[in-house]
Image (tube, rainbow, N blue to C red; front, side, top):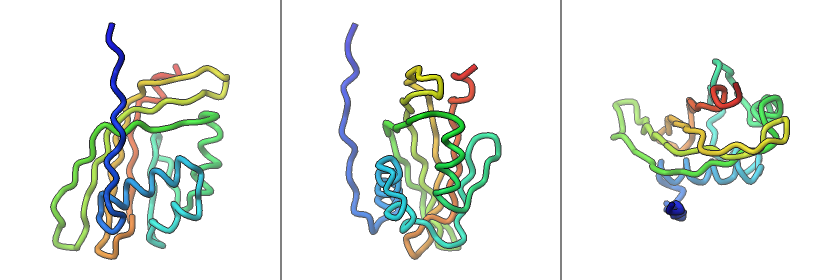
Length: 138
């Protein structure tokens, strides 16, 4: 059996749409909410599995406390779409989640896709999150 090789993420300058996403996710995982919030436009929406919608990271963190004790992302791929007519760049981020459930049991290998819309000012205006965490918890 071979062990998967962990590849360090490519760090892109944060003044690019991809760099915004990478910096936002790194700050969020470190629970640097002020740092992560700096990447969100005032009108930003974050939509998580089950149709859970958030305007602030504090509300997102409060909700996440009902789902797991800790979680981290391993990013496997980031795709950047061309800028649209409204100046929005769409970024898709793919990978897996690992962490600890509320019952203390570890989990890993949970697939996720995050879809971000970055405006022409370099801020996140929309984040849509899909993952298999709910399926894994059954």
